[in-house]
Image (tube, rainbow, N blue to C red; front, side, top):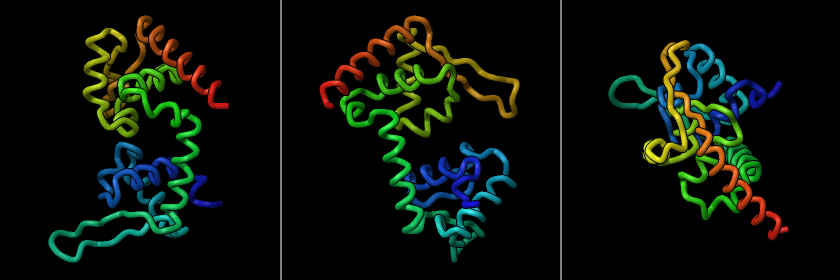
Length: 174
C-alpha cells in the first residue's frame, strides 16, 4: 500500500506544499495524534514524498519539506482540488464569497480546516458573522474544544446565489 492511501497523507502533503518547510508542530491542526503523525511522516519519508532534516545548530528541531516527487504529487493534488472547487471561476470571488460557497458544500466545518484553506479566514469569519451569514459555535465534546462554523439561513441563501453565478459562468466556459 502506498503511503498516499493513508488517512491525512494528502492533507499533510498539501499543507507542507503551501507552507514550504514546516516544523512537526505545524501539522498538528491536520493530525491531532503524535503517534499517527509520526507514523504518517515515516511512511511519506520512506516513499520519498517528504524529507526530514535535523537543524544543525541550537536545540534539536526538525524541518519537514517536500522532495521533488512530493512536490509533483502535491501540485497534482492541488490541481485536482482546484478543479473540484471550480478554481478557475473562483479566482475573481472574494475570500468571503469563497468561504460561503465552501460552507454550502458541507453542513458544518471546523474553523481550523477553513484557516488551512483560506488565508484570511479569521477576518472573513468575523465579517460574515457580523453580516449574520454564519454562526460559530464551540464544540466542547472534543478535547481540545473546536470552533465549528456553519451557515445561517440568510447565509445559505446568499451562498446559493453565489453558487448559481458560479454555475452560469462555468456554463459559458464550456
